[in-house]
Structure formats: C-alpha cells, structure tokens
Length: 328
Image (cartoon, rainbow, N blue to C red; front, top):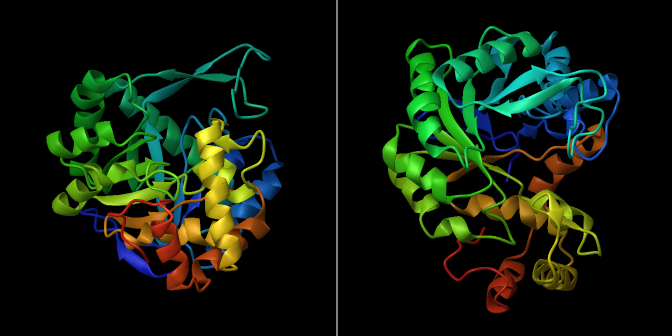
C-alpha cells in the first residue's frame, strides 16, 4: 500500500492520501508535549506527502486545534484536507477547574455537549478561529451516542446548510460504534464517516451492516483506532488499553493470538493492523495519531511493508478474524 496514493473519500469529491494524521495525541491524549513538538508532528506528515489532518474541539479542550493551527500557518491552504468535529461547545472555567479526562494539561475550558443547530454553527466558528483558517473541508458530528434526536434534527441540518454554502465540502459523523452510523447512512445524505475501532484486527463488527451500506451509498470511511487505542501497537500486556480503557481478558487473549501468528510469519503486527482495513472497499484512509514525529514516519513505513498471504490465511484458519472479512 502506497501511503500517499490518493483516493476520493465517498461522495465528497475530496482526494485524500491513504494515510492521514489524527490529531488527538497532539492535544495531550495520555500525555502532553510542547507546542513545538506538536508542530513538528504535523510538519513531518506533510513532508512525507500526507494531505489529511483530523482534529476536534474535544481533543485537549481546543488544544489540538490551536496547535494544528500553529502548524498550518506556513502551509498553503489548498495543499491539505482538514477535518474537525461538532457536537461540543467549549465553556470557559476557572483556572484549575478543567478536567481533561484522558487529555493532560487542558486549558481552562470544559467541553459541553450541544448538537443544536445554533450550537453547531457556534462550534464551527470557534474551530475556524482556533485553527486560523477560513474553511474546514470535513465536519463530523462527534460522538452523538446519546443524542440521536438533536443530532439528526439540529446538527445535520446545520451541516447541510454549511455544505450548500460551500463552506464545508463533506458531511460526516465520527463515532466509536457502527450502529448509529448505519442509521445516519439510511436517514441522511452523508459523504463520509469516521469509524473508530469498529473495523480492526480485533473487531470486525461493522461488517454486519455498516460497511456494506457505505459501499452501496458511496460513503467513504476514515478508519480511526486501527490499533484499538493501543493494544495492537504496544502489545497484549497487563494494563494494555483497548477502547480508551483497560483491555478485558478476552481481548488480551485475542491480541496474544494475533501476536503469536505474527511472530511465526515475522510480521510486524502494527503493519498488519494498518493494512488489514484497506482490503474492504468502504475504507478510504486511516488516521493514526502520535506525539512523536518519528512515529509518523514509522506509520508511513508500516503501510509499505510486505506481508505474506500465508499470514492472513492463518489468521482466518485460527478464527482470529471473521470468515467474511476481506483479506489484503
């Protein structure tokens, strides 16, 4: 797989590189870094030829967007595709009162759910200011798990309005589940989705309905969480993270099984996790994130590694991936 090969993302008309950059990590996910290092991460991605960056107001309570904005200052606007998210407004708090959760050293703002029409428009304008740009290419409705009605009646019409005005190019939703994305696909006119963690070596549940539906409706998938928030990258060790929490025993056991097959075939499991998803025609791009510039280069090289067909065949014969999952 050529990381800088471009493919059109669903019905958006946007040609994105197969490898993009997720920007949660530069917002302080699981540990903070200096602004300068965050800028270096983004610039490394561009130096390698990647053209897709994905951020959100939630990521470090605006810190990811502001740092990404610093990195974009000297970059021609037409040379990259920018994605951000709506569904949370950042409300100012007293110094020291901000709880960033899994984001370290957040600024004094608290993300508050708001999927209303006006809330989405405000969130969009705030993101433009933090990013220092005049347009955003892709806007995702972010994590509306418990907010379906407001998301479809408030957020979605707001994004339709922005798309009709040409201020954004693509309407999307970004979630850690596939079921509501399938409902969005059936009830709205979406260009693409960000699917986090639900199509990976550890979880192919989106094969049941979402991925075939996306192929049928020409909705491109940006795959996030291909390492399932850590376990496929750092190993099936005690305390390994899966879906942003501690991995349960059955997931650790499955990850160990994947590691054993990878060792027998001398395959880097991170490379396998990165390449596996592209065998499905619904998947257009992946957006792994990192705090380290060298890791951007590593992710780039992982997509280019040769993986023998026997490796994939053994994963299937051992029952480690589903029978109906396409293989690279």
